Image (cartoon, rainbow, N blue to C red; front, side):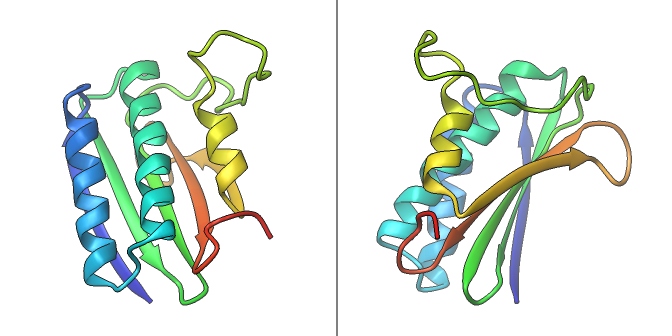
Length: 133
């Protein structure tokens, strides 16, 4: 298993940096192409949610290549109310991020942080297809 993690300030301008870091790492791992593009979308949505919907000062992102899939996990420091929820598609454009994550991931979910405050939201992308099973 390969692992890569980074921490960035919880600011809107950090989302682009998070995308670049993920893309660069996946290229190094030989996982560019469709899975790389999908990972870029997923990290953008998850990181943006952490910035917009929590009171975090920083956000941690972790990638794990587990052979058959890549797992992206985003850990915020904010208060965990009831966890993330995908909203119906007919709602305004804002709030569709988790619907996108659900559509392109083979699995996704969230849990309270194991250490400290906040939540971890994660998504898995299959190698080669980067889509649902």
